Image (cartoon, rainbow, N blue to C red):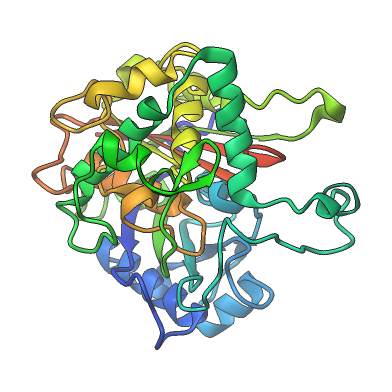
Length: 389
């Protein structure tokens, strides 16, 4: 049974803070929830389904529904890192279609910047019980290194260059200049990126995302409720999710789980990549964007470098505008999980509510894609396709 049209996103709100020294993680979740409910024209008493991931404190939904005084009949705390929130939109559709809830609240929040986390450049010890730890931890895995391996392999196999990767950061910076909340608002050049300090060969500092506090929230409802509200109708028409791991040693670092999640979402939606007017693409690193664009079908495998160069991702200039809020590369990466902000900006574009300087004309079909985990080891991928009615 297809989930196409089973739910609409009626509320979307992003926390404006990028450093929350005076707020707890639970408070950030609650403020995001209120923002999304206000945006939808609903109250907390309308919510009967709550969805979160590993960023929620304590026992996740158990603690958060109590903290926010929600009376829900369905909860879900499935966690696949930064792509959890695209996946949770799909899970909300499943719950709505099954009659388990009518109004689903999805939240994300975190304080890595205030807590001084050296995200991406420090070894994550993890739980010794994790099945991969005994094999990988002795080698000191670092997030930036795992993505750098993918970039190096892609360059070796397909001739991708650092200058081509730099165009992704350049496009993000062109958009971030119009976002008053973006951490990095200065427009950069290809030369700026390739001349910035090397973090992990071949990735430079400006190839990496920012570290920020903050969060966001979404409200997904059944169609009847969405049509009763005074908000633009943004229908979820396609969802897909898929993990990618080591495949018992058959490792290919040049592609992501989007190879499977994308086609599943497009098949459900009944559209193709060339129909998409705007794309929110997870951008923990520039290589993340390039690989996902290929795997989602926006260009052939190995052609991502040529696809992104010369401003092809810049709104008003390129063929496929992306991350018009500045994305994780320039605006924010709350809780080191940027998936929900990708959906929020896609909703803004579909509604026609993005900044006028970056709003895509007639953005009636938009896509938001997330990646959670590490491209170089194991990760989850999830894709959402939205249609403005």
